[in-house]
Structure formats: C-alpha cells, structure tokens
Image (cartoon, rainbow, N blue to C red; front, side, top):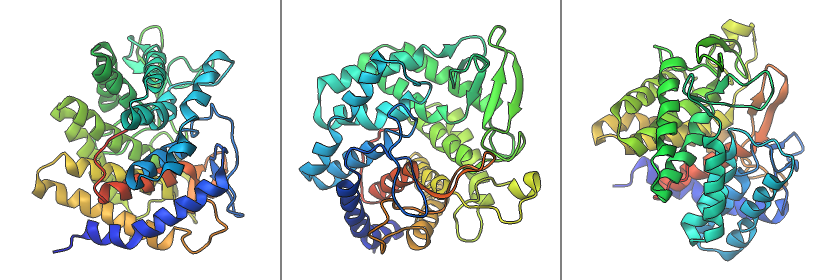
Length: 376
C-alpha cells in the first residue's frame, strides 16, 4: 500500500530535482537570499546569515542523486566562508546556519578533514558566545545587544552537539543544553507559542523583557520563530534523549498545527490580525517549509501512533506548498517557493522567495524520499 509520503515524493521529487538542476546552472557562485517579483535571486554578502542554504541544497542534491556537478558546485563554500574569519565580518550566533550546511555537511558526506577543522572552529566561535549568567547564547553583535537571545538559535545549537560528538568534548553539549533549558523556560509559552527575542541583563543574567522582533509584537506568535522552536527542540531531544525537550517540541508543534489556516501554509504571524490590525496578512511559505521538515523530524522521534498527527500535518503543508506556492512551471524563476515573508514589521522582503524556504522544502522532500542523514 502506497503511503501519503510516498505519493508526495513520487509526485513532486522529479519536479524538484529538475528545478534545482536549473537553479545550479543559473545561480553559479551567487550567494542568494531573496528573489522578488522578477524571480531572480540576489547575490548577498557571504557573512549574511542565509549564505549556507544554497550550498546546503547542493550537498543534499548530491547525496540524493550522486551527480558530481552538485558536489563540484558545493565544494568550495566552506572555504569561502572560513576566509571571512580572517577579515572583518558579521558572524554571530548564525554560524550554525553558515557551517552546518557547508563544512559539516561536506565532512559528513566526503570525510574532508579541512571541512572538519572549519566546522569545529565555527563551533568554538559559537560556544564563545555563551553567557553563563542567564545561560544563553548571545544573538547579535551590537554593543547594546549583549543580553539579547533569539529563538532562531535553537537551530544553531546543532553545531555544538555535532562538535561534542565529533571531538569527544562534552562542553559543547553542556552549552547547547543550557541554552535549550533557558529557551524552554523563557521563550516557550504555556500555549506552545514562542517569543522571538528575550533580553537579559548580561551582568546578572536576570530576564529583562521580551521583544516583538520580526513578529507583530512581544506577545505575538511569529510563525517562522515558532517553526525554529519546534524543529530545534525536536533536534535537541534527538541529541540528548531528554523527554523535557520532546514535550516542549510537541507543545510548540501542537500550537503551530492548530493555528494553521485551511490551506496549511502559515501567515507570517499567527496573531498578526489582533496585534497589528492587518486586514491582508501575508503568508510565509518559508515558515511552512521549516515547520514541515521539523514535524517530520518530530514524527521520527515518536512511536507510530503518536507520530501520525505530526507526519500528517507535515504532509498537508508540503502538498499545499508544492501545489500552490511553487514555481515548477516557470523556468525563468530562480527560486522554488513564492509568498515568503522576511521581516514584515520593517516592511522588508514581503511576498518574496527566500533561500531558506527553498532549502527546508528540499530537505523535507528528501526526508519523504528516505534521506537519513541529519545536518540540523
């Protein structure tokens, strides 16, 4: 009997493979972040937080297809990123997003020792951002942001778990778990929604307040942030086996699923209409793709009966994205997904294509197709 996952994979994987092959030809060495109405991806600076996702797609497609051009196109990215450590750059907590889909992925697939060295260097950099007063990994580098932590970092702690396993040094994992414990306590609300930003006094570690960030307000529910939370907490459970993280991941996932509109693709903020008075609330296809891959991860961690609602929700989201939000039939469009929302409060990158949405869509469909390696 053919499962829903198998049906989705059979229906859309060939189209996805053809699309990414065209992207490989058109993007070249660009570091894509956003594609607007013209469908052409920009070429942003290498130390921007999104620069690892395109090479991550390349490595993933190489592993899924065995086609050497993907490997050739992906090979130099970790070296290019690592060169920035010798220059003035803007690396911050997002080194996980930079190095997990480049150096770590490359090392896992090829065994390249230089990639291993670069990945461990990045993990050391991330560990150095930990503030034991407050037990948080500092997010950004601004002088007034020493006490800022953001939910996105839950995805980046996978770099620390990997470094701990690879080096045999438990300190990395201790930091990752301390940060995750803080997130469960300070970010995840009782209803399963999550803050984007929580600030601390960096001297005492006392919580100061929550900020709206890229969400509609301090008490809103920014959908991409909630997707980072559910996926990152599921990952933390996979690395630790601590049921507290599994429970928290399920709590966030339950909120996310219950808040979805009829077509299964989330608005940019689940509470945007109440908080901001919006009448036309834009969707965020990237949040849907991230959540779908995270829900598949969560389903894999549970017994069969308990996993079914999460897998079914992931399949529902993926079918909607692939049917209504993808550019399969537009060869001029360099991106896969449309209707992504980057930063609505700043009116930046609204109703666009986003490279991280494309990455997590490819990752989720690879999981449906049986991909077993884990990067995040």
